[in-house]
Length: 232
Ligand code: CA
Image 1 (cartoon, helix red, strand yellow):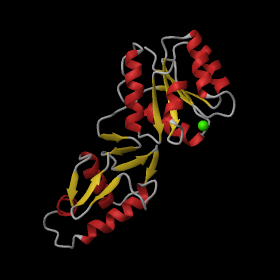
Image 2 (cartoon, rainbow, N blue to C red):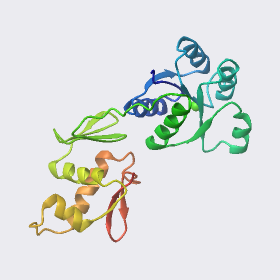
Image 3 (cartoon, rainbow, N blue to C red):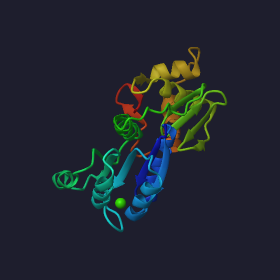
Image 4 (cartoon, protein in one colour):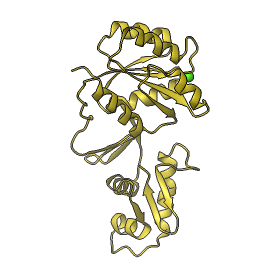
């Protein structure tokens, strides 16, 4: 069973984000920057089951690519990548032939869920995510609990032992509000008599290392008057 997915997106950073996350989810990703290239790649790879198509492209647009794919291929799953600024009425009207759409910016979890759903419908079995014991994978992060290291988008993030312990606690408790006391007890130990402030100091430093924008953190979010939450 092939796990091929095509991604048509002219913006390299977005395309890279999609490729990394779908690869992590176990797909083989074929990339195209222009509509014409995408159509050619689809001809060469008849076993592509899902295509993600950006709409605004330098050559023919995503709608046209969708139309041309559908003219010859009814079984492939098609997801349009829309921008928030695009008027949805217009987009859905033009989207005949597409199965689904995702609005940018989207989370890795949302992207993978949509692709999985179409892939399943197209008759494929969902690939098992690349996973090895001793790892916690929450794209874009991958925590290796054996050598105590963290990667973001495949790149190593240098952490102190305390920062590592905090991240591990977060990744083991996704979406759960953790009090500062709880973090202090787990990371520094119950015999530690320092101040709670040390938690905030370390969180601030951690945010500088892992957040896309530390001023507006999305991974480690603040739970006011209580503590912090790993925002997945
Ligand atoms: Ca574009």
